[in-house]
Image 1 (tube, rainbow, N blue to C red):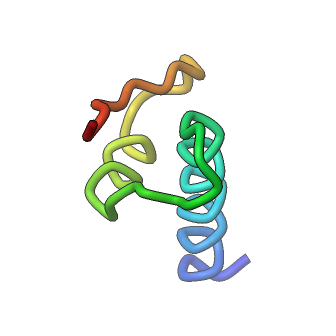
Image 2 (image 1 turned 45 degrees about the vertical axis):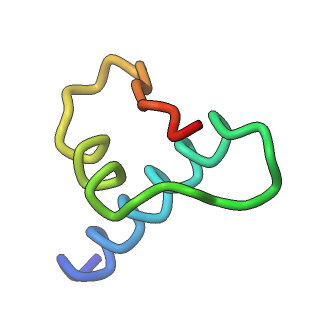
Length: 52
């Protein structure tokens, strides 16, 4: 796959993973949170700060 498609796919997967950590039905994650998740090692652990 071209690099842009791979990066886009990784971004989409990271966004989906973060969405599953939110109770409501609205994706409230920032681009920075997604990029942070994309940059970590493959431990599978998602850490986010709640905004409430």
